[in-house]
Image 1 (spheres, helix red, strand yellow):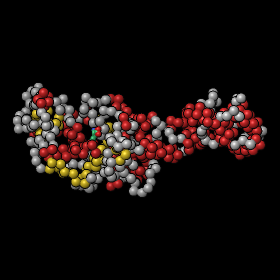
Image 2 (image 1 turned 90 degrees about the horizontal axis):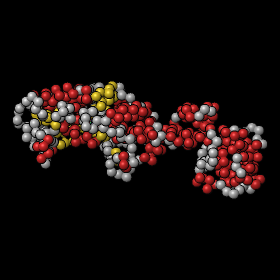
Image 3 (image 1 turned 135 degrees about the vertical axis):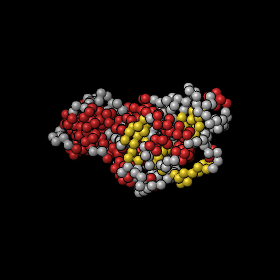
Image 4 (image 1 turned 180 degrees about the vertical axis):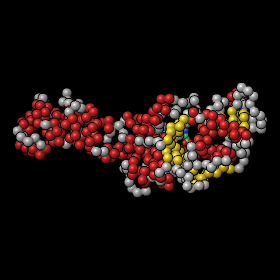
Length: 451
Ligand code: GLU
């Protein structure tokens, strides 16, 4: 095995459904590995299963990969455009005695109970014109097939467990196995990093590489991602597609960071990392084979951490897309950034800074904090705020303290109703900061509306 082979890895999705988090993790590991060692990351679309092909899925897939920031260096290469190559490769194996034409009808195959019975294996005949056939691989009847998995070590499979698998289908499309091996060879893939559900396919691929007389790439099967409560990860169990996480307001970098840690660690206690940091720290040796659980709470936390890492101007720009009052955007951005968990929260959390709330929108907070005395208390604080000349945090705070002291009101009994009157909601950044940002006239107006 030549160590000096340039690193070329691929993400090879089948466009049959949404890009799920497992697929995204595979793409991320291939991407990080390529970038870490100065290799090439290419995209290959495995679209040879025409029954399951879905054009929308393909478009979504490309969009989601771009959104995640996983730019590919080459491709996408479409297998459906390479049919001739697979056809020739299959014929080549027939010529060399490693494969054979099989003429068995669907009806016949359906009567077989234990896989294909190798009925056509020794027929040694070519198809007549217009005769329907598939090409099957002549799996060795005995012996074992071994391969070395970079994180799992030696894996051995008795050949008797392997079927005479179909390489070329009746419609002249290749099966996944043939197309995958031919492409990984032709596209000079150095390492195959893929989910561990493909482990049982690998011995078949190894036999195919041998039959072709090609050197196989190195294999690395990534650990299973389990649902939060155990069991297989599925949409039904709360796990979602990359698109769903985007719609929920997750940042792409947070999702990439979180998924990168499902099966890998940087070797120290760092968790929150930028893409560059992940690239620098990434190595195949630090991928472990143990199944990992998808912990959505941790993803939420991770998202908050990544939000904190963004510059305030990022949020100011987002706000400018929604509101006309550009001057206020920078202040509001600074106030809201530490409280944001999801980008999607921004419009609702910022609304009262720019628009007067019609009424108290937060009924729970209203029930909790509003009392019979609240209108009276609010009148007192409105009067006191009106006297302020320089309407800043310090003077606002002093005004609140003064009203509390002079009227023996607890600060909470004054501030919470005042917040509800001004903001319409019971939670948010510090009240003095909000009031300062709104400005004296607006604050007084909102407080005076209460009676
Ligand atoms: N097309 C396969 C998939 O959808 C690729 C498996 C592989 O990486 O070989 O996951």
